[in-house]
Every structure is written in C-alpha cells, then in structure tokens.
Image (tube, rainbow, N blue to C red; front, side, top):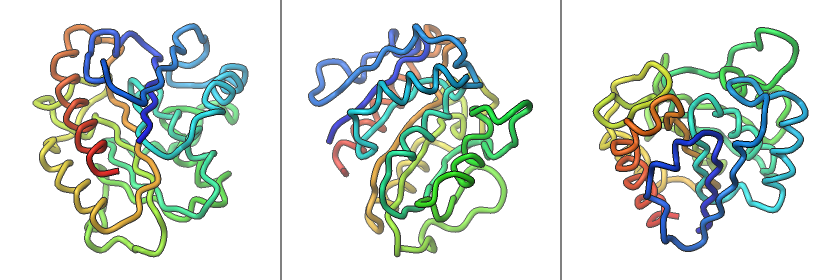
Length: 217
C-alpha cells in the first residue's frame, strides 16, 4: 500500500517512522505561503497540482492539524460514493471567518457542500457518536484522523486535546477494517510549534498507526 507524507512544517524532520520504508512518497510543501490554518487560492492550486499523480487510496500523513484541510484535497479525488469517518477533537465544520476560503476548521463543511460522492460524515471525538458497530455497511469509508483526539499521553499537537487513548483508537480502527471497505486514511495532528520537543511521542504514535495501517490495508 502506498504512503504519502506531506511536509507543511518541520514536524517530520524530527521523526523516523517513515525512514527506510518502501512505497513512500514525500512531498515537501514548506515553500508555500498562505497555508497555515487557511489555504489561499494560489497555494491551493499548487497543492492540488502536487498531489495530482497520487491516489486517494492508501495512507497519507498530512502534518499538523493546522493543515487538516489537506483531507479535502484527497476527498476531491474519490470517484465513487463513500462515507467519511472523522476522528477529531473538533468538528471542523465551521463556516469560514471571511470569504469562501478553505480552512482547517471548515473543510468538513466545504466537503459536504461540494462533493457529490460524500454521503455521510461520522465524527468521533465531539458530540453524539454512532457506535462503530452500528455504522452502515453499504458504502466504503475514508478515514481522517486528527491526533488531537488523543490525550497528551499519546500525542503532542498544536491544539487542545481530547482524552482518547491510542489503544482505544486502534480498537476502533480494527472494527472499521474488519467490517468495512476502507478507501484511504489520512493522519494529521503532529506539531509544528513543538516539532522537536514533541517528536519522540508523536513518532511513536505515528509508528503504531503506520504499522497497523500497513498490515491491514
């Protein structure tokens, strides 16, 4: 299974979970302006162009939660009906503060508005949750993970965090993979602000997630 790593900050410079692995593409996008939390139109065009040759299927590491909107760019490439599973301490469905700009806090709302193939969004980490074993099985799933859903025992992020443990997340992911077709998974929630000090813990968690996903796809 192919893996794509998009570098928007220096977070992955201090981690090793992806070193010496096969079928990994690394896209260094730290040269782009107008990307932190909000994505301006010019940089959006560049990012769409840079991932053009890559499939939404597989594993995608997309840096800090400030760039969770990169999930939208992967979802735009899916050409069949699907449901989105979102692990996040924030719903990411807020209207933009100004204009119609893509943002880390509003990309889910934008996806629901513009993507005809996206049928449902099921969020875990905020509000009411449908038990994993009660999810409909008629459509394949795309899974988006923001590690800010995890407690500070398992991740250091740039946002306030929830209290889920990594073992609880792996248990939920196991149920999803056992009972559904999974199209792709992306993972954000690394830390640009605390890239070096949070590297050890985030690298461990990314390694665990990478190993699990590599074995189950």
